[in-house]
Length: 347
Figure 1: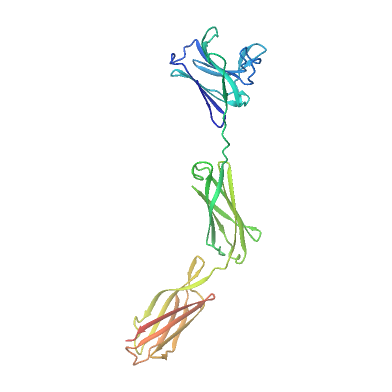
Figure 2: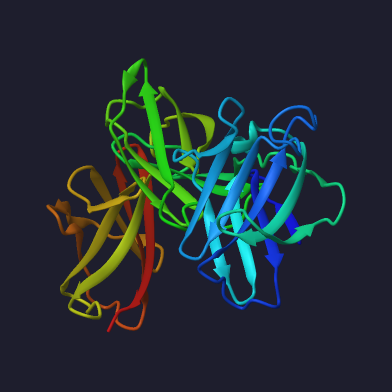
């Protein structure tokens, strides 16, 4: 006879009877329980409950002292049966009134109760104490919080992502697909629209920052639920006006090399970068300067070409072949400046 239990209170009994690999139709095995450990209550042997294992059935019974019989309790789920020389019984200790200690005995006998083949133990009863481990507390924790871009920019998408881990239980957060993420955000008391993505070990939320929100603060929360556990982390960030920068792209020269006594055109593609966005220069002003042998050249063209960049034009003086033309193109737009120096040999 072996007895065990798990932390949920499920009791498991195994009664080995090597002489019978299968249970004959006229035999039964029962395990009887004295839950109050008082021999004066229940059956003549002090038992209040019993589980009967027969060839094709198993059931949980309560002793009725009024009529002196065991009555089946259908509401109690009990599993098991008889095979390979052993009876196996499984049920929750709640069926015994939730007691943590009880006495019990096992009997192999004829199904009509007329003959007892074996009684275990031979004298007295066994005592079993249910051992329940401490309850498993499922928790979630946020190990890291990332923001992109940091700080958030007006008119841009702001992403907050959290690395979520399980604490005290196995597996990755959302590893079985049962995890969920949630977010909330406000700017100046007004709710910000968001969308979220949940993957194994991570929650990400994207907030649409209004273009008019520069200088304001976004406050919010990001969190996750999984297996009944929940975690939330607050965040706050000031929305800053994005830094504007100008960068030079490709150039176009006509002719490819300045020539003495001829007009020379220098076109420059200019890009405007605002936060994560990029566009071609459309407005501003341009200043075109050039010198040959220390003498300033007068330009006849300095203008912005819409969606293309800027173009400068100079008249190259005669007699300057072999000398160097040293110049610069200065572009100003949206409060920032780009300086593009160049040197070309005149032919």
